[in-house]
Amino acid sequence: MPTKKEVQAKFSGPSARDIIASDKKPAEDFLLKEENDFQGDKDIDFTRYTSQEFFDQEMSLMWPKVWQWACREEHLQKVGDTYIYEFGNYSIIIVKSKNDLLQAFLNTCSHRGTKICPNAGSGSLKFFRCPFHGWSWNLDGTIKNIPGNWDFPHVSDKTHGLQKVKCDVWGGFVFINLDLEAGPLQEYLEVLPDHFEKTPLENRHITLHIEKTLPANWKASQEAFLEAYHSFETHRSPNGANCQYDVFGKRTSRFLHNRGTYSPMALDDYPGDEWRKPPLTEEEILKNFGIVDLETTSVPDGETAREVAAKEIRLNLGDRLGVDLSNYSDSLILDSIQYHLFPNMFFFPGITIPMCYRFRPLKNDPEKTIFDIMFLSPLPKGAKHPDPPQPYKIDIHESYQDIPELGLLGRVFDEDTNNLILQQEGFKTNRKKGLTLGNYQESRIRRIHATLDEFLKAKI
Ligand code: FES
Ligand SMILES: [Fe+2]
Image (cartoon, rainbow, N blue to C red; front, top):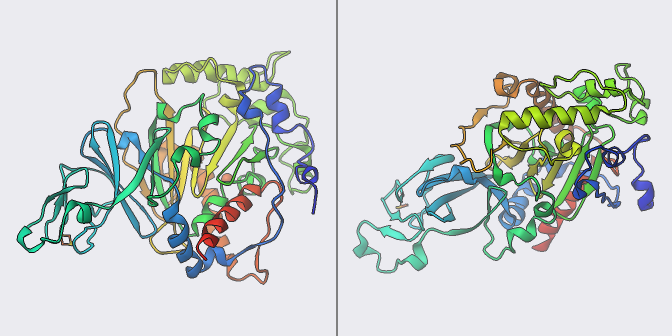
């Protein structure tokens, strides 16, 4: 078995951490941490992505036991606002039942099981009413009225109130957990509260929400976003070729890469001559940033591309958003920093890539996923959250490039998701039993499978 040191061997040239550590505006402590132990190198069985039986096990043994975000607090601003969150065959009601209280319930009638709220997403109600026989409940889940009450002496709030689901909030995200015995959300989040202290996501608001159906298993879908190893081939971009990968615990991992730079080794065995071997000039790095709206085109002597770009963004973007970015490090302004929370959530603390993602199974289908992308923009100090925009809903064959707000990113998301149909098909025609992972660059994927196995084995 390779030693930890061998496993952690990365591309040649300066690492992401080396670059961040030499920035003019020093990085926050959490950006200088590195954690990645060898986790084994066995193939990951293809049936984990294709088999209905494996999917059913995930649905019964893992999904009802984990915390996952259902919506943002900004979806639930007034008493009576609801959000219906669906994953697999589960449907959950989240409701603002009082001014200072969010509650969650299973979206099913306690009479004969009918789904109470038919439509996923945002809504607003005075009370809940089942469309079949008209049983109704108050916003706090207690019974309001049962037509023909004389026939149900055996029914009370205790037995027939709406069925509760655990509900808590972090970073402006409303999380739910179907397991009434689950430990606290705060514990589940591992390093996240600490690492997001300087960039509280509750102070951001949704500017764009896209829900796209993908033709692939939920794990394969999110795995396309867990590494930057695919950047040269899929995106024809050098960004990410000195990416740092951290696995902080069973549920949290991170990638962190400096836009604009890449390692010389990354070019050794890639075809094509579009990219020059580093070291690059500061002007070349500036050009490679790929940051839309960057006005600076040259780097004065004695300064670095990172320094001048961060300075401009701090000022211009700060002005445009009405927020003070003066104490953000160069790295927090420029770099691509992405955290994953098991099983299916991604959060970005940075300023120029302010997104979050979520991947959830569509109904009972191991080969269909709903991919949510939200852009979260910082709110000016003291400003109220505006009402969130309605999501764009796009189907398998529709393109991200039809969404004007995405700009150039539309092409990037199309490139990422176009691979998925081929991968899902390729799983089934392979003589090999499973997929092979790089020990370092794909370590986050391996960690997710190991954590998933802990849930599946717990009940066997
Ligand atoms: S099934 Fe809901 S009221 Fe009868
Ligand atoms: Fe990608």
